[in-house]
Length: 405
Image 1: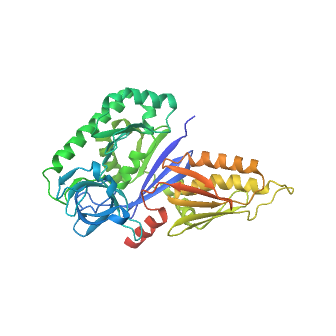
Image 2: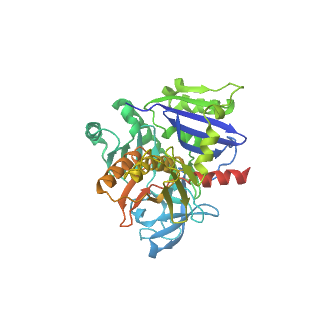
Image 3: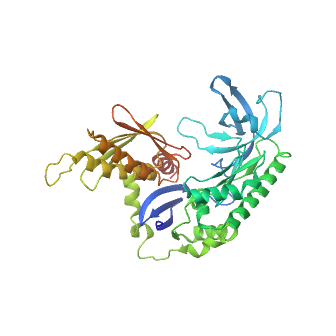
């Protein structure tokens, strides 16, 4: 049985807040500054540029590529073999002043520059077209039979220039719809390569849509009941986007117009945000988590706190840990934590309890749409997790928004 999903979009002053709900619980929070459509856009995640190689640092396998005057990004030179060069200066795989097509695939984080890739990807609702990676892939979250069927049906698309990855959202539509989108992405891909041959360095060949539109592209359509927007301006922009790109979503788009009760109060969004920014998170059973991001990793410490059982029992730590595992998975997703995450559960002596806990924890983590892996348990009983790093964590984004305001 699929989960009921909703999306809330609220304009507060000059910031767009997007909340994803599953079974009426807020599971993701995104925010971004609202920009006028005619306002000059800064480099953003997903933008595609003709960039120039400024420096090469061979000992770390990296180059730094300038995508606009004064804006330099990190680049993994192992990708150069499949890069699309618009101006090649030497015979080596990559040389100073080479010009090539790159896409921003990771935002700048603190002191680290943004990352670009020459493995360009064009993301649709049901599929992704990838330059450099030529395999035909299918989301691991689709049933095995459906995965095999898609691989067989799409085998004729195999080529040396690009690959295709079928997304989880394809589970809810026909194969013809997915194939139609792939052909549309192929036309866009060919057009970008064609334009790149004649455009000067620093040209932006594709601008990503506003962040709140990108968020809507990534939400699972399975179980999606409605997208509720509390702003006439945003409603018009989103309606125009869906009318052009995804008309089938329009019946689920709704403008919220109740002046007596705001959408924020109706769904307690401000309380959810406040909780997602606090260091301490209380559990229903009286235990609590302490979430502490550091420069290198994030630590989540589980404490028994005020937990009291009706009678003293040996599995008290196990009971707290079970609830903590569910809440830790929720906090990782809602805070958009990434990289290395260490969870320090309450110590347990029973191997059976550890196996049961890790099984539950892994199941909760697998619900996250961003790749999240439970790696191992250290000899000190610390649980190691990795989560793919794409966007900045929630606390950094909120801090940046507050500085702007």
